[in-house]
Image (cartoon, rainbow, N blue to C red; front, side, top):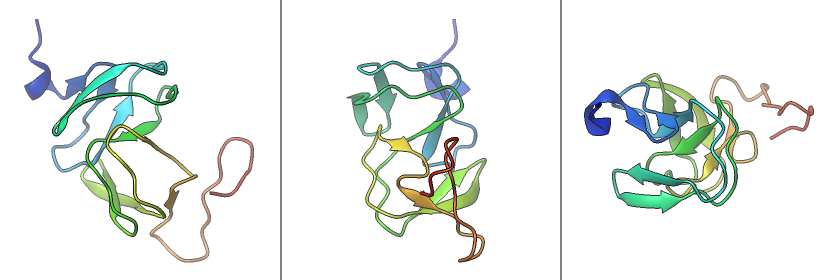
Length: 108
């Protein structure tokens, strides 16, 4: 049996790097799924699709989103632990001219 605290697995989510402030869904995670985070357990307020991210810790507006130990974007609003991290609350940190889009082509 695996020790979730050391193998990077938290229910249906993976911690890809110890410095990350997001977890990545390794499977679809339905609304209400309990996820153990560093600050305690949370229940998902919405379904999270496979390969999408949730906040591992609180991320303040303007804070750096880290995945694979690297910055991947900047929070456009404060993000609470367990909340979906996607184009609706993150922008690219690469250049001001790059806008993230979801699968339907809506800018985030």
